[in-house]
Image (cartoon, rainbow, N blue to C red; front, side, top):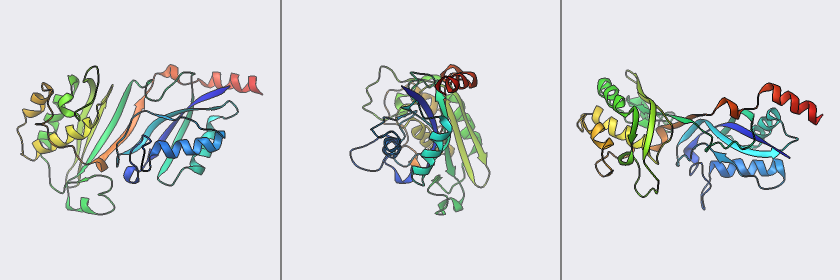
Length: 266
């Protein structure tokens, strides 16, 4: 008998090839599964709520896996944090209902992107964690561009080519810029799904508009295009953070269920 767990994982993506295990290079999935194998004594598969690219960070990536029923959530968290490398940290572990999957069960996902707009953005203590642009951006242009993104649209022009998908439509429930004058601009976005490089290509295009490099009408025009050749290059990976995935309340085991199972197993 096994239990299903959800770990909320923070990681510094600077030294990883991304979440997904690859033929070469250090992956977040590889590190998590290495630790889970130590705990279980056999290989354990871990599923992530999103497949982040090389250099992308996370401050709440949902990771699901199954362990023997003897494990409880607090002990799993302690074991993971004791064995994971220093650039990973588990904020919480929840026991989930059978059949839960971190990616397939997600109702929405949230990202944020940080652009450093001052000269100090080039500091080694910041440039690893934000786009060191070092130039001011027009706040009004950013706000106007973000407003176009909200709602249901086809984002094919804001994604890498070659993805085989039944459709490219995403429903964006939140898209907004928060500007800290003289230091940074942060883009926050939540949607039911994201395409590969979608957030970075949105940010790259909006920044070009806010720098006066392209027309503000381009945001809406590209939402009606299937070609990404006129889209701005994607913003650098180091400014992007996976913030969280939202799951239905029914996916979590309630305290009453956990107590019942603990008494049953005693």
